[in-house]
Image (tube, rainbow, N blue to C red; front, side, top):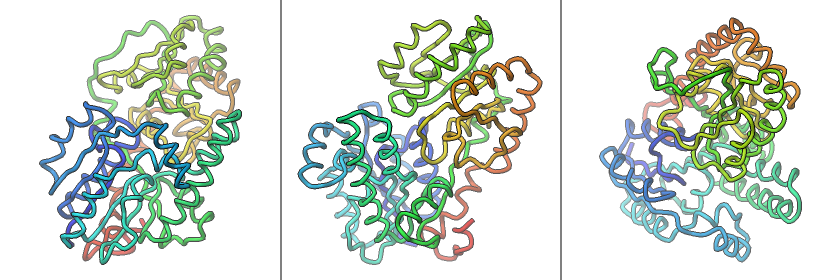
Length: 407
C-alpha cells in the first residue's frame, strides 16, 4: 500500500496512560505496514520533547502544543454547535498539515485516533481509506455524567452527550471502518447508528506481557501492613470519583477491621480532591511514580471501584498481568474477557467491596491463586500482537483478508 496519515489527540509516547498505550501500539503496528505521517497534540513541554523519540520511526511528524482554553473552546462550541470536547482540539496548523499531506497524493489511509481528530479528516478523502478509532462511545460517558451531576453541569454534560452522539454518528457514516476498544462498545454504537459489523468493529486492547512481568525485579515501596492499590490518571473524573468514594466508605470499613492496612492511590496529576485524601488514616497519595509496577508487585489487592467506565480498563489488565488479585466494579469489569471468581473478583457497592477486600486479605492463598489465574488469562487472551492481527486488513493492506480483520 501507499502511506498512512495517523492523527492523534495526544502524542503516542510515552505509553504511560490508557489512551497513549493504545495509540502507541497502533502506531507501532502501522509503521511495520507502510510509511506513516503523524500529526498530534502535546499537553505540555515534556510531551513536546518526545517528538524526537518518535521522529526516527516516521516519514514526517507534526506535534503541536495544545493551548486552546476550555473557555475559548466553549465559546466556539456554542457558536458553531460543535461538541465542546471537539472544539477544544481545533487547530488551523493541523488542518494545514493534513491538507498538505493529502495534496501530495501518496496517502492511502487516514487513521484518526479519538473522535476529536475526525474534524481534521476532509469529507472528500479521494481514494484514501478513512479509519476512525473512537476507542469508546464518548457521548455515552457524558450522558452518564449528566445523570449524576447537579445544575448547571447536568445541562452542560447533557448537551455534550447529545452533540457528541450526533457528531460520532456523522463521522461513522463517512468512515470506511469505525473501531472500538471492546465488543460491548462496538455493539452499543451499532445500536445507536444502525451501522453493521462490517463498518463498526472491535479492536481490543492488549498488554505488554514482557513489561508487566510478575517475575521481574522492581523497586518496591515500603510496606508495613496489608496494601490495597489503585492506579490511574488522577485528574480524570471517573478515577477521582472512584477513589474518593472508596477512601471514605469501603476503605474506612477495611481500616476499622485492619488498623495497619493502607490504600495507595498511584498516578500522576492528582486532583485537589484526591490530594486531600492523604489526610485520611492509612491513605497514601503518591502522585506520579517512576514505575507503577513496583506498587502493583507489592499490592496484596488491586481495586478498580469505578462507577463510570467506558471500554476496557487498562489498569485492570495490567494488574492481572502482574498476577495480582483484582477487585473490580461491574463498570470496570465490563468489556474484559475473564471469568469472575476465577480470574478476578467483581464487587458492586462499598459494602461488597470492603467485605471482598477483607476476605482476600484473610486468605492469601486464594489471592495468590486468583493472581496466577489472572496472569494465565492475560497471556491467553491479551497479547498485543494477537489483538492487532486484523489491523492490516482494516487499513487496506494488499493481501490482508477480511477474516483477519474480523478476528
